[in-house]
Length: 311
Image (cartoon, rainbow, N blue to C red; front, side, top):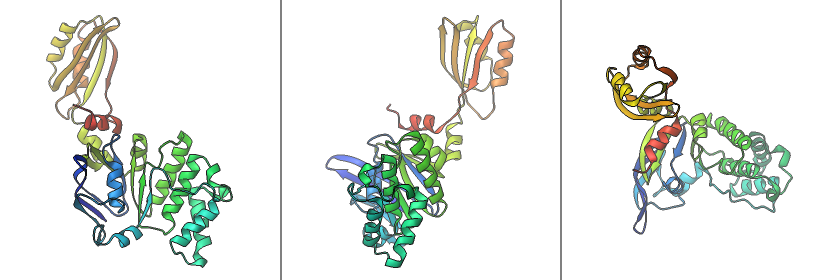
């Protein structure tokens, strides 16, 4: 559906997006993740034709953004982080105005506006001024604007930024419903949203793609080195090191720390075998008391931090 190849954007000597390449499949919900300043918004603005790339190519269906910008824009609905709304207009009047700009037939306008009001949960506020609405409702109006012409592709830049938890859940549910029929690309800082909503994620850092995979595959690849934590009473650091040295499969002993409550240790395994049983059997042969023993679960948050943290 969308092919982005060697996409680059320079601002004088600063490279905001650095030769990124990825594809978006039809009907997919793709999450574009990255820390502040990673290049997410710049990438989406080039994809939607609002910025001209320094280098690279964007193909949408049979068109390229550089050669056929109008057909590409007609295929897309775009919701920027701050929706460009007219605060003095009533919601109904604003959506009617957008329908006219989008050249919807007069017979189609009211049914389309009603359908979008139902989908985006706007029915109860249709005759209120936009400026009196909460940010969550303003985002819904912006989403209805982006969907007015029933585009094949939706591009959403931080659609849940600044919303409260209830509003976030509501917007997430709307995105899920829309995603059953359309291709969606959205950027977010809220990793739980991407984990709950996306079919696939692309993580970018400092303008470069550092991960691109389906959620389950990303977690599996990041979880090859299992991290195990344990806390013991009546133990000491050197003795614990000796005991753990007898366990086959330990990759690295990353921490052994003596505290008032006992000895805390962290280690990694170097294969797919679960070594927790062997560790437990070795400890049982001592007079130590096992207070805590668990394997760290790989979440999108831990993967994100590993891929984007500073060296």
